[in-house]
Image 1 (spheres, helix red, strand yellow):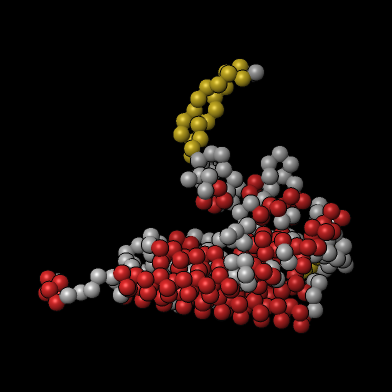
Image 2 (cartoon, one colour; image 1 turned 30 degrees about the vertical axis):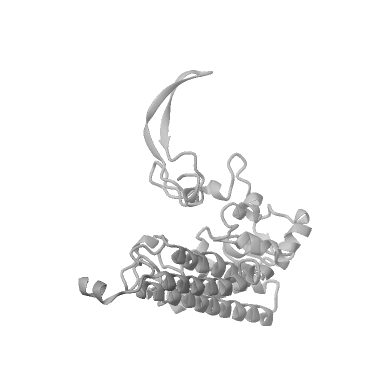
Length: 327
């Protein structure tokens, strides 16, 4: 539906015809559009162009200060599947924005760290042209959001290097599924950025961090973050192994990965809980990595899945010799 996933991801807008309407200037022809209204970032427009500026820059004013504030990102990145805004809002960076942001200059170009603002917003880390107070370049402006993102930490079963192409429909893992990893976490490396590109993107984003923080702080933070990716992947793999056991024991059907109760619990493990844990680590979002959809929820969900499989096994009809002969 256009008011669910397409609200953020974007519809395809087509001209279906024309109709005449009375206006103050007399009769005029207007296009009849399907897929409209929409401001999703991946929108396909009638002329074939792709994207919607109004996803971040609302119409009428097109104000840069609106795009630089985290409220622009909140619309689509609040959770529970993409809890970026929630994690940011409880972080030290978010606290400084809410406390002091009214005193910052959100209009200046280039944006001077330490002068125009004293704590990053989403745009600071991922989009904006950032310079020092002396005018030295910290980060170039980009509207390709993956330029400063080495790892893809949301939306898929495991965190993994970012895809090479924005067209993720071309991705196939070694099992032929349209996923960037196998169900056990092996990356579809042919479709993902290599180690050199990953290193470059990490360095680019770390330069933004180091505009305020010492190297020891930045390196320590990234070590923790990348370790969190490993541990959250491991806990997702544990849930996957439980699900595979249910399939192997014929108490669940793997024809469709998403339609049974045990499979929905598995989806929650990575779509909600692992995502929340990683975002909390990436942005120092405290409780969203622990008790609020974080590690506690991952460990509890693993136990719930185990208990559910045990229940299914007990409820499974016993196979008698007569039934075995009929097979």
